[in-house]
Amino acid sequence: NSKVIQTPRYLVKGQGQKAKMRCIPEKGHPVVFWYQQNKNNEFKFLINFQNQEVLQQIDMTEKRFSAECPSNSPCSLEIQSSEAGDSALYLCASSLSLGGLEQYFGPGTRLTVL
Amino acid sequence: GDSVTQTEGQVTVSESKSLIINCTYSATSIGYPNLFWYVRYPGEGLQLLLKVITAGQKGSSRGFEATYNKEATSFHLQKASVQESDSAVYYCALSAYNQGKLIFGQGTKLSIKP
Image 1 (tube, rainbow over the protein chains, first blue to last red):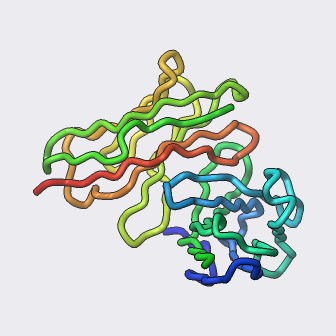
Image 2 (cartoon, each protein chain N blue to C red):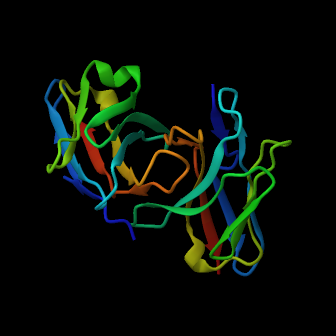
């Protein structure tokens, strides 16, 4: 069973509010991914890190979304000004490396933007 | 772009009958993608079911198997005899060998008839 911890499990925000969620990867996993799963079950990759460094991110995250993985602290994903379309399940996953290995997923943070 | 297609959103199979869940992919920017099946059981997080990283090889786990068919660009999931405990949502996914970010299909919800 995965030991990726995500908090909070549920998050409700009004439009324009900040929304912040956290992730503790599995111990010893230097690579962390964030995905968004919308109400249609579609997954979208948002960003990934190796240790504290951003490796890849999509354009969406360069505007209202920000993320970090500081050493000795949980990783976080923050939406600066939430929009209704951001309502989704946000999944954090960790892995031993980038190349072809299993990603271990957390239970997700379900964000609802009213 | 790269994509994964699962044509069935929902499948219902009688207990002890055989199962096939279809998955095809397009990997225009990735020569030889890694292929995965992930599963989400009710109330649980997403977890890896099986993976294959070499074309022509077969992966298997928990009675499920899938063969990486490069010519047909397919990775169908099969099981000879399903059980009630197999009820879950199954996601086909791919990644580039050196990138790690997963591209998921839309998922197939499997329901088992007693």
